[in-house]
Image (cartoon, rainbow, N blue to C red; front, side):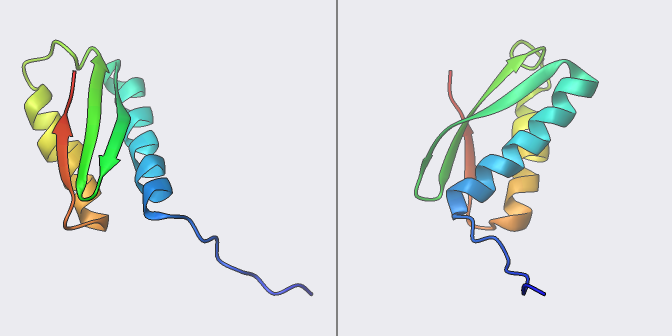
Length: 83
């Protein structure tokens, strides 16, 4: 029997995967999406699109939902929106 080894994903890969999961939910239930643009140190730059791009609640989605979820796993992260 081969011993099980845990995958060794980088911080950037983990953040990208987390954003993909958040985006899948947003796409299915809200017809919008969030995409990772860039990671610079502790700053994570994302873009909201689809229905989220023009929604008046996009700031709450960005900081509350996207940022809040990411900070659960990466407490020092700062999530900012870019065009």
